Image: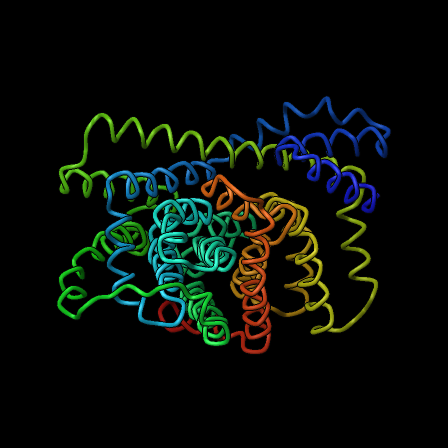
Length: 428
């Protein structure tokens, strides 16, 4: 059954069918081939139940936050300021891509919103400064994934709801691995550009006076970070409510800059609706596919197969990691979390692992899924902004950063305190 699903998935994607349609058609096909029940009759109820989940409210809110920063010009100024400070490194503006994504990850809980915001600002620099296009695109796709690891994070909110785990603890656990991963991304660019300097483009010429002059431009995202995350730890707002506070803060910044007008609001709403519709359509189609896969027994069969192997604690964990790495190539990330968490978390906890630690490991695995073909959402977002060439360029440019994610996963398994030290220190 699984082989049929994978082959059909690849055929539909190769035919350039939109991802949401692929997932929906795949669900209908698997129902027709392997189910004795007419599961398609439950499609309306499944989609309605998924769309009524209140945690999804955070998606359009975080997307809107990124749109406000982009349309008001704040994102461009933040990128320009970070470029002045980081462009001296081998790799030039590719470090600015990662640095800006890291900063915006601390204001937007969405990887898609982070990749879309920074990608829109950075994309013109490829030709202007003669960068290697594939690696440049890879920094945008990979850097965008930081949006779901560095708090605030939509995925960590969802994991907390699914497993009854403290979201504030998950947020604290995500800080150190998130910034470590950003540093590893920068190291990848540094090593590649030291080996092949021509890939690093032409650096920006600047002075210390110019760098210091632009420092105030870094304050807006920091302000939004303290509003969003600070409101959670102050007990003033839930994580979903904090996203709405972030939107209010972003509008306030736009007004302070004198950019808040009807034209900006219209552009923000249009951009938010377009991006949100794309994300939610994929999620809802994937929910129906997950329902079908669960009904015909694929998910339960995989879990039973893992348990029957009796590989021991470390062996079972490595097998689960491999399972997610493969599954992430073929399934949308939020839906993958919704489908697998009820089955996998009891196994992980039974092995003696901490649920907060597993939440961070799972998030890194989901980050890898965002930039691995054929269904890597960030790959499509960056290619959509690029509007030329093939998605193969984005895929090839992202591969070195997938390796960095693998290294971080190994480090988290070897040293769990990378994730658990900060929540234990602050919350006991």
